[in-house]
Structures are given as C-alpha cells and as structure tokens.
Image 1 (cartoon, helix red, strand yellow):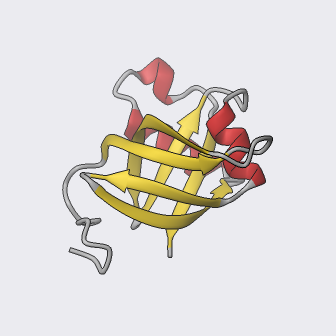
Image 2 (cartoon, helix red, strand yellow):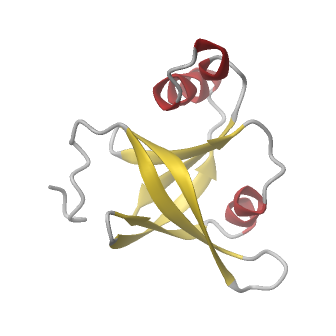
Length: 112
C-alpha cells in the first residue's frame, strides 16, 4: 500500500477508474469511467486522438480526481510528450498488437 491507500505496486497494470475533470467551459465537474494503466507509480489515460471532453478538460484544468477501487485521489494531469513512454503505455493497455502500436495521446496523472 502507498500513502494513498491504493496499492500502486500490485500486479494489476490496467483496470477501470473514474476520472473527474472540471469542465473547461462550464466549470462543472465531469466524471467518466476509463481504462487506466498503472506504470511507475503513476496512472495513465489514453486516446487515439485529442477529441474527447475529458482530455480537453484535463489539459485546460490539470487538477483532477481519480477514483480507484472506491477511493478518491487528487492529482495533476499532464500530457506525455515522450513518444517512447506513450508507446509503452499503449502496449501495456492493449493486448492486440495493432492497437498497442497505434499512436495515442497519453495523459499522465501524478497524485498529490
């Protein structure tokens, strides 16, 4: 267990979590369930492109909340600029080789 309560060293690399962002237009909180990858004690969300509200919201307002196994954690979101790390996250997220090797937009969340 970490100080967060969630075991970041567990064997589970990908799982579902709820990402809560603040709307870039409304300022209201928005929640979405997504497949997340745990890697190097951070969590990563990804998409094939930048056309999603949750991603646009997190870029505009990087203070986010992530709910994992019923526990809620605050953190800071940032786009991953390292192409090798983006590829690694995709490979961890997808078993399917085609999807694992597609370019993706990756959002990293570092917990407070």
